[in-house]
Length: 260
Image 1: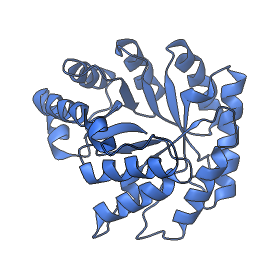
Image 2: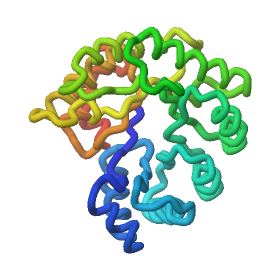
Image 3: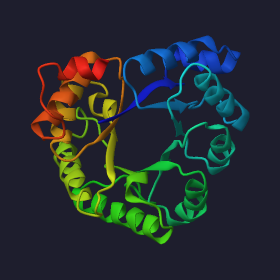
Image 4: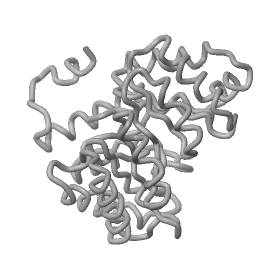
């Protein structure tokens, strides 16, 4: 499983304040925590705290002061992404693009130049799909574009777009069905990723819902997840689900091995 740590996000009050006050310590703290917890990427999202390229670059540089992990640049504005790419010390993950062909045509050459990967949200100009087939259609458009630009499938992370269980319960089955379809597009397959916490928005039992849905998505091909990697119960659930899918070799110490 590829774990993408979600905690350096201006949606959290401490990070928003850090951006506004140019206080690096909260960002360094969250970067250290997630690195130690086993993240593979650190997601950096300045949200509505700023729309300035220099602020996004400052956040990335602050993270890189304390962690060697690659950055997930969480922004959909081409000007900001293009400003941030040159300062990333390792090939980053762009979070995210959609099936908008004009934006793909603008960004894919840049992504290829920097050997970056990217998350492809399977939505189009009409918004988020309501069924698995439309999700599959939009995913196919993204896959066709990476082939056009000679980008390897393992540089694409397809996101079926997780909806809140509390408000759109019927979507859970469609999301899992779509993820299962995505595995068939290329050989080797593209990655399948999701922003897991979206499923538990507004619910009482957030942890339980996140863990259960994560395990079900692993059974349908999920191999990357944007989540709070400090949540040991969640991480342990994902690792165990991968054992059942024969993606890991069983050992009594498989959880301890991951922690090391």
